[in-house]
Length: 338
Image (cartoon, rainbow, N blue to C red; front, side):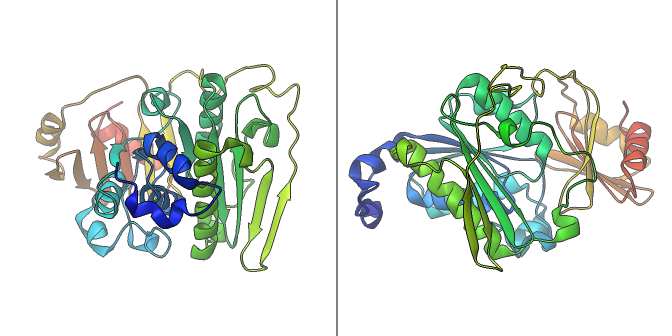
């Protein structure tokens, strides 16, 4: 990799040429290509990481564009999956970086394949369920990861280095009860808050790769509206189920139908149990008599009875137009099959 384009970055003593060379050899995984993922991926690719693998399950929507800086109105109109649209923009920013997009749901059954060969994982997700899976996997495998989250004008970041401090479950011993925490749908989100936390996550990744000793060792909390920054010390719990007792319950759950609302979207995601592979062309032929169908390269779109389906080759389906998760699962069973 030609390092001359990074000469101003290398002038910073904390990084230097030696640190830049480490970035060029690094392999980073960004989980989620929405608001935080846009900032994190853009800054790390422009900063010269050698390889980046991106994963996202969703498509850009018009309401995303105020905070998800890798997408534009054309991506929304074309219904380009976020991971693919992001990869295209990132390659245009820095052709030296190898970008590998993955269009799928990141969960306990897909994380091992996604994380294979990576040096650092970055949380740019919008839900606790995925974060607990990331934490279980990272602690089990000894891979550092950077957590980030934004809501309203506030955000947090925590850098987890297994064996050298607290893990995510030391901070959150158990997942919050459904409906007990705000979401971006109820509390909103400000673009500057996303930019600040995304930049901090990117900086933490650079530190982990170039100078691990300089990483943040507490929970950083930020409020951009009140201009408040604070680092809160987090203790490593000796009886932490994950890093203390090494119980990886979020990786070992039995596979069952997963039905969840995608934050920032009116789509409900349905993931069938077990590894599956379906013929999208055969499904399109089967649905044609009862639905309007459109077969794309990576997915099939079908619309019937006011319900819109986006179906991927592994059976994962996004259902739009249903007024509840129960309704989404019901029409999925009727038209796609259990």
